[in-house]
Image (cartoon, rainbow, N blue to C red; front, side, top):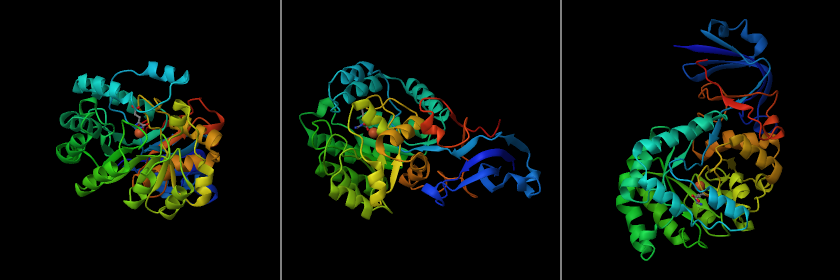
Length: 394
Ligand code: NIG
Ligand code: FE
């Protein structure tokens, strides 16, 4: 058994649900980690006299803040190719409609397994260097039976939170026969993907020729559920639509984007707050010049919210949870504390995980240290790389 004592924690943000914004703040704290789990949390002054003194290693944070490792519950990391020109065109006024996904599909299909593996590993390392300790990874740039299964196999090498997104768009070769593609996704593709996936997801967007209508999305989700997968939905990104209501009706763990919400959508999400989390992706509004949803109003209504990057080549090629936190504070009305909670405990809830997203005895010791005295600096010092996952082997 290996054990580490972490002392000198100027501000410990436990996100245990207590206190202001659920942050469960402690000053001048210490923790003990045993075999990757939090074994003790207490005052630094007690650490000297407690059983904590018998630990093998010690790390002194010298007054820095410690927060739960960020949980990035929505990311598309398995892709090749470059769409920088599409971003530049969008900044000059070309709207996003999902059509660029086909560019990434072609490049991803053409890549070797090792090329994809290298790209995914680099993106995960980039995330960890910014404080993310759990990431969900979707397929969705393969869109053939073999390419979707391959994407999920590669994703599984870096995370257990893998999501089958064969219903990302209708690929060009099926443009004239959507029904045939839907049969493929809900049949042989799902069968090949399911052994490597925990979740199924669908891009439900009735106003895009590229995405799936409410009825089509229902078929995909029900088939996924029958194959034993949990449900996630891309909904209400490009305009008002049925995604949120469908997610709530089917008891999905998460409905993501929620850029355009009606009053009825907000009420449905509030009523379903124990089951369905609204995952907000402000990096997407930033990168597509879209209006930001009002996260503060969602919290007031009683909705469970999470924050994630949506790291992908089209709508947000940022892997940075601190960037997302800063945007949520500046543009969505959250307090710095609410944003940190949504990026940790909130995101963990959207993955139906209670072993991550908080620092409490028995939880995984996924810890992120800030080069700062408090969590407020995550949004106060926007753009400055102050967060990193703590390597306990250090
Ligand atoms: O979550 N909207 C659907 N999928 C991604 C974007 C994918 C892309 O443009 O490559 C998203 O925003
Ligand atoms: Fe996405």
